[in-house]
Image 1 (tube, helix red, strand yellow):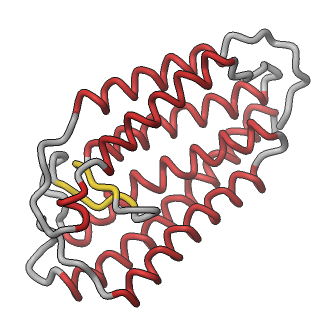
Image 2 (cartoon, rainbow, N blue to C red; image 1 turned 30 degrees about the horizontal axis):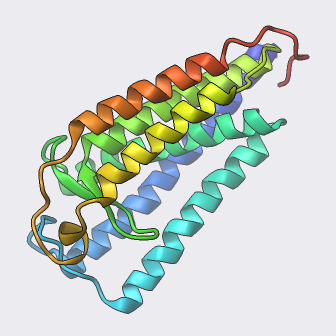
Image 3 (tube, rainbow, N blue to C red; image 1 turned 30 degrees about the vertical axis):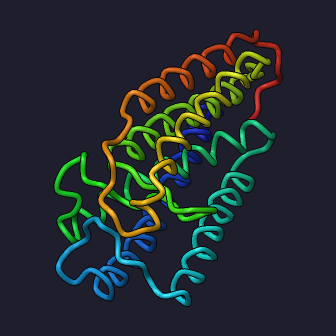
Length: 221
């Protein structure tokens, strides 16, 4: 098998794992909805029990650890491992919503609100936000893996880190700024779509800057 073929095959296996793992994740949501939202998930949020909340926090941390471990196992170098992690995370998040649509016929639209994460406080936002981020993660992760396997550098410069940091801060603010909706059982305020779009553009610019290094590395498979 050629080097390129081996890399593509490894990406496919990582993606297959992510698709299966997404079903496991979505099945948990099915059970939680049956417990707390038998008539369908919607805002304002119903607060879950402290016991279930503790389990959810640990489960979310375990999920990130599993995806990071998959990236570590699949890759051979630091940035290549990060690329595989991005691919795994992006596909997992995309198919999380695919499976929810198949099982629960939810979300009804990309503007439906969802609880995206719980650590350290609840993150909330329309479904289009995590889907957009997941798509970008999948594409960028795949490009990192392929680029390094061909012997090209991926070296984020100071500008890349700065753009990524600004983008992350804007995204986090868009998800956790509405404390009443997240913690006080109120309907969410209008989402800041301009922050999502700005963040995505900053991530793309930072990624493009990191890809300007020359082809000097030995190929890695």
